[in-house]
Image (cartoon, rainbow, N blue to C red; front, side, top):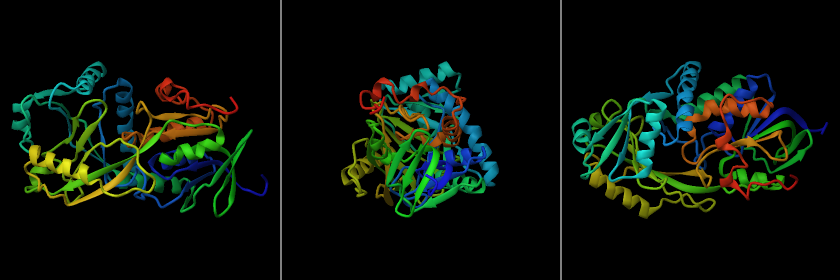
Length: 386
């Protein structure tokens, strides 16, 4: 390994999780290299775009605790970046009929002491005339929800990583990983590298990278799409008048919407959560038409002719909980697959967790929910040498 370019830690994946981990490690005086196979913010992953929801309205108290810790982490990063990364708007969780996930969210917020109101259809209409909702609709109104400026968040994390000394290598794909007893060797088209520790935060490419290490994970990538609709009255649909909102559709499926903020229209989506083909970024016309019909039905203040549509990726585990753990056979290899469509909001918090795991520390949060050997990932999560 003496001929290799050497680092203390290598990180694969330049999304928000990889950048957050690289930053946290460099601030601990580690020599860090970060590999991104495309450019930062590319549209083939899960970290691009201008907005993500941040919220306390979760159906599991563990996620509520993590969300509470994420807010001050983003505030600290905002101060470091010298610009606001978060806008508080309040949030609505809506259900047209009894839906278990909606009730679970209410119970979890009650158990965690999160303040919220329950609104019936008439009260929703009085406070938020942007909606035209069917009889029986109910909402949970939680005042702390808001919008993360996703592109600014990614830039802030990457810039902080660079300032801390990270060698951030865009357009350099890791082709192979050779695990050793006390480190790894990495091969890219440009060079070979050695590192004492490795963090894999590569989204949909995680499973492919792990297979040569004897670990197969039951993760899948779904093609999701967001659509933008222009409002007839922009002021009525701005962040001072309209909160972020989530519709509970049954099971674990959701639809969501954002107020008019830094975009040419309101950003809306209905989750797809079906496996995607590699390289398929075409707009799903059937899903687009369904969303346009829902806009005509419940958001009459929007032009139902979509302004534009974009695609992105969810990296999903079967239970939609994250993976934050060490490799079962190579503890100096740390695996981070924290997406499942709701991981962005935790990036600066999880960056510290990944640094703890990489440096043999004890994370400050309980990671039992995110273990690689949990039942939902068996028997696929296994080591060839375990």
